[in-house]
Length: 151
Image 1 (cartoon, rainbow, N blue to C red):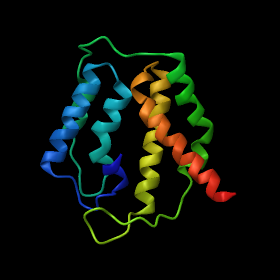
Image 2 (cartoon, one colour; image 1 turned 45 degrees about the vertical axis):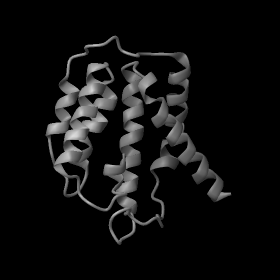
Image 3 (cartoon, rainbow, N blue to C red; image 1 turned 60 degrees about the vertical axis):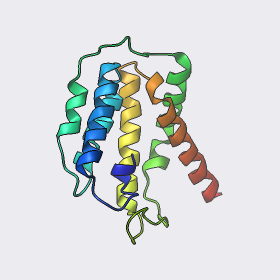
Image 4 (cartoon, rainbow, N blue to C red; image 1 turned 90 degrees about the vertical axis):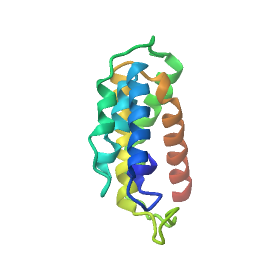
């Protein structure tokens, strides 16, 4: 998500792409296709960091018993979807990049949020939601912050 949101301020390196490939392979091997696709396509959604290599992890056959489905994780993921409009609406960003002397770009943050919401939807459709609990919790936190800042 940080790569898509551009919070470092620098394009991904070869080491970053290798790390993304490893993450994507592990997610694919555990049956978490939505997570593997999010990690694997991150460089394709990032200006200056285009690499198709990490996406190969989404093609990895499932090697371990998938974490799969639980009602709790599905309800948490599903609770984010009605908030998609709030989450993906444009927002002024005032944070600075970690390694560049420029602000984080609002359009890149918005793109990362779109990718996260789509990933949760894909996880729900594929009935693989347990691995997406941290992403759902993070999105709910962002939605709550945004709702609180409007009141």
